[in-house]
Amino acid sequence: MNERAFAVRRADWSSEQHLLRAVRTTVFVEEQHVPAEIEWDEMDPLCVHALAFDNAGAPIGTARLLPDGHIGRVAVLAQWRGCGVGLALMRWMIDAAREAGHAHVALNSQQSAAGFYERLGFQIDGDGFWEAGIPHVPMSLALAAR
Image 1 (cartoon, rainbow, N blue to C red):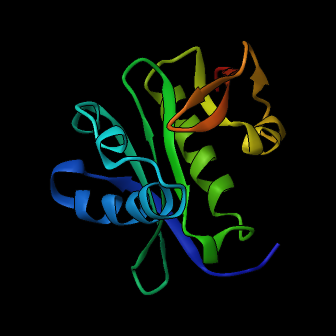
Image 2: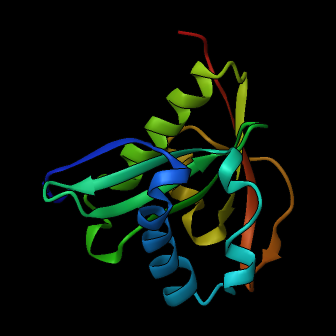
């Protein structure tokens, strides 16, 4: 793993959406060609957002937790992949879900990323499907109380 300095913290959608949008636009809209109208939805203001940033304060990754316990929009800029950013974001999200009282979390993983989530303890729990032209699988994780 590449050792580069970064941190993860909660982000406020109303005042920091430009930072979250910058990462998601780069990863999903530009890199993966997800249509912008699919990427942005009415759920963002209702979610708990995590933001990863480098030691200069630039946004490098993001994720969101929906009110129903689904984790989504996990994105890390290409130059930061393999540095532990995705792992840190997911651990932050899992802790946030636990603190919110969720007994489990779920996500729809791009099929190519399922192994990453399996290393965190997630299990595939349904049939694959296509979303935004990308194959996905539903996954879930039971949360142990702390």
